[in-house]
Amino acid sequence: MQLAVHRRTAIALLVIVLAMISGHAQAENLPPINSPATIEYHSGKFIWGDLLTDNPSIAAKFYTDLFGWTAQPVALTTSSGSKPYIVLSNDGRPVAGVALRPKRMRDEAHGRWVSYVSVPDVSQALATAVAAGGRVISKAKNLPDRGTQAVFADAEGAILGLMHSVTGDPGEYLPDPGDWTWAELFARDPAAAGGFYQKVAGYEFMPDTRTPRTDDFVLISGGYSRASVLPVPDRPKAHPVWLFFVRVANVKETVAKAVTLGGRVAVAPSDTPDQYWRAVIVDPSGAHLGVVEIEAPASGKEQP
Image (cartoon, rainbow, N blue to C red):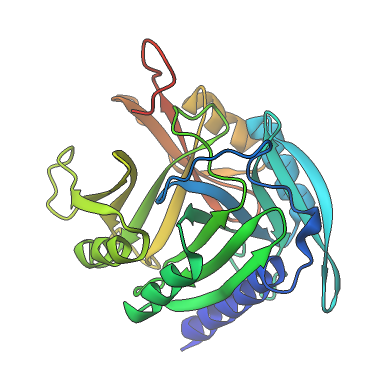
């Protein structure tokens, strides 16, 4: 019962923070996804991330030191006053934001990344999610210069954002170090979860032939693999969740640096990497994030 109360409290706080970002904020200070605007839209592509943490300044410093991102504080005006928000950019391109999520319990794992996937119609995708068993965390809102965004929990409780950018989506090329590049959904029923996101975001959904397991799947859109759907790990406190990945130049160096900056390692990089060498780190606020090293193709900036 105590665990259930803890989890309800965490979700309630998450709802409040996400509503502040996309529901009640006057978002004229939020930068557009692309400047100058593109004419590209790639439904199913992950185009933004928000980190919710009890100490935005410490979190922002961790990621600027780790990835070379730059941080720009902005003030979001809400019905209850001004709220801090930090925009993180990679090589001048905004890629993420950091918002204050107060910590109410001493041992609470309070940090959380929420990523946003591009869809052509946020309200329609949100309605489809609800009809398929999901629930609304933050309802669809139009934000000047940004577009329309919303946040929902899927049928198993994993949280994801939806966005339609008024300035288009980032192009379909091999992400640079410091860019979002991959996602993994851990689900109790991977096949059902894949079907859920096929309805909501229009993904193609098929078995992942790269693994011997029959319950690993891939979500595909526009001819590009966007995410894996995997079983929830068989360990205490494991629950359905999205995990997002940033491309880095060297996984082992990034993981070692994360530890020196106050983070820790959740999944260490393998000593026998294949095409993709990856690890999972935990930042000082407790938020999990994947890092992946990708060997670039011999020519061009084509995504593998």
